[in-house]
Length: 295
Image 1 (cartoon, rainbow, N blue to C red):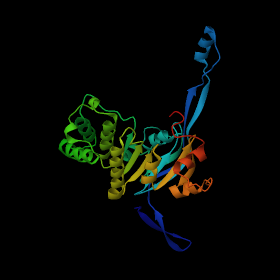
Image 2 (image 1 turned 60 degrees about the horizontal axis):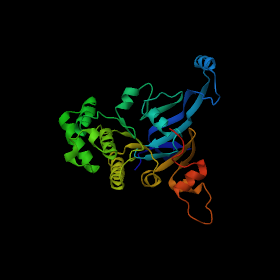
Image 3 (image 1 turned 30 degrees about the vertical axis):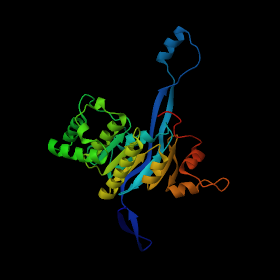
Image 4 (image 1 turned 90 degrees about the vertical axis):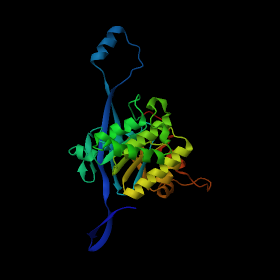
């Protein structure tokens, strides 16, 4: 369900999607010290400390994209392809070296505080106060957004129950919970603020099959009920096919393909008349498995 606007083109009234997220030519480079396999003497090592040769890593390299209101946009890439760096740029955790990012028309650099109020992010490396319970962690996070403790407690319970998290375990310390249960708390924390832009960086990693389905169904519900803008990175091809309206494949910091699942499959000719899967397309276009590389 996408919101539409109308505009005149060549004298005709045409529909145009309203974008909640617009990325234009965004670039982010990192620099790291080159490693040498050469065996060096002590004085050479000392000299190298003061004269280290730097290597440029093009984590995100000139990426552009548009995500409409009410759309789930997927990003598929092997580890180290740049997808998590792109999510961090959109979420204002990193500053782009070049290009621009706008969330509902606001620039993420010049209007970062305004942008943060309408977005939230779930990542696979979510952190918590481990000695506090999930309820205490969620209430603390909600209070930072001006939500009362009573309202936060009620919302947290409702969200966690929707995700298949037993209410009786909300008072257990976080360090006593499994990684999958902690991931559900991370998702609940992101949803407490009712974000209109939801950035999901591998949100179902570590979940069992039933929990994964619960989370996926909840993501679809959020999109349908709120017309939220959702960006999802995932290693799960079935998840991408189920949830995403469009998918981009990222490799070495660049988008190498973009479209619906059908459009992506059409880019690769089938072999021996065997129907292709999204995974076949990914491997054919990148020459990699999703697990390859380092992020």
